[in-house]
Length: 69
Image (tube, rainbow, N blue to C red; front, side):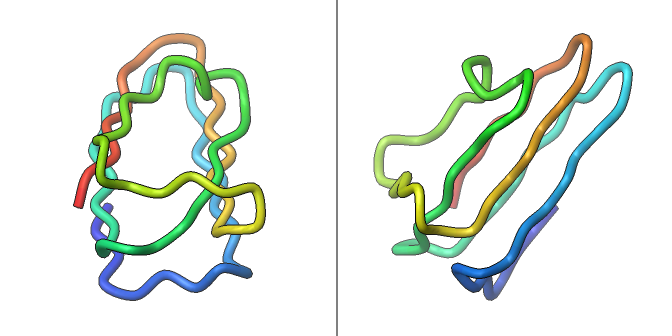
């Protein structure tokens, strides 16, 4: 998924049995990751995580998610 513009009040649900994916977001955007995969999501250092940012609810039994810009 490639988000060229992402607003703080957006919410995205990512569900499935097996998920392997890459999420590209613009620099400086704040977001929060919740769901069963939240602890397994790999996030690049220069990306801001904030509870008030855009919400990604990621639920899967297995998989890998990378968030980068």
